[in-house]
Amino acid sequence: MRYYWIKTSRVIKMIFSRYVWDIPNRKNKVYLTFDDGPTPEITAWTLAQLKEYGFRATFFCIGHNIDCYPAIFSDVINSGHAVGNHTFDHLKGWETDNSIYIKNVERCQESISEKISLSPKVFRPPYGKIKKSQAKLLRDTGYKIVMWDVLSGDFDQSISPEKCLSNVLSNVRSGSIIVFHDSAKAFKNLRYVLPKTLAYLKEKDFEGEVIR
Image (cartoon, rainbow, N blue to C red; front, side):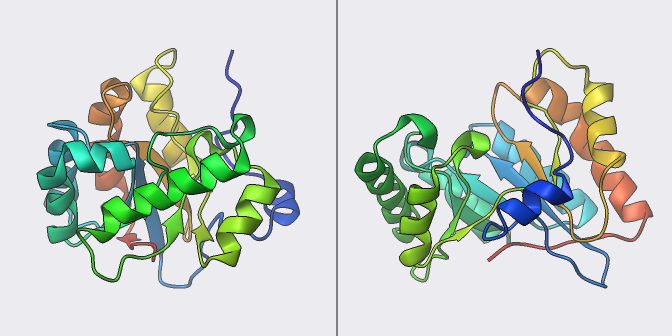
């Protein structure tokens, strides 16, 4: 049974207004994001697709993966994309002690800072699950907490690639923050959905912008 929503409602955005859910603009910009990388082969494929269609994106990276695959992480940066913090060990905030959670975020930030001297403090909580107290602690130290407007559901192996594509194309609009995953679990859907999404966005004159 699916336990997540594809399109974030206006009510949720109002209740949790201190999180970034979308970035309204008049220039037809959308914000493609990729969670859980860098991942061998899959991140490189993702970068190639973005390059082919001329889109920039933001990669919310797991610190452990940054340390394991530093060359791939460097490729993301050198390709003109932005990066964000996704904790070091992909922790679920609701189930983690605050001090452990914050230290895990800081450890990921250290991995990012080794590659980027002025690393942006942009954070997305794994699973979208974070305690209010954890969010406050992060905001107090300068982090911008980025959620999403459109969730592709590419990680859900119970849905078809066609359904995943519909999740995106039926809901995207100017200012949308769209979530994909450059991970092995999501690749079955991602390899079908991403090229078609990029082609659609280009046809509709959307521009891909990064989050900083």
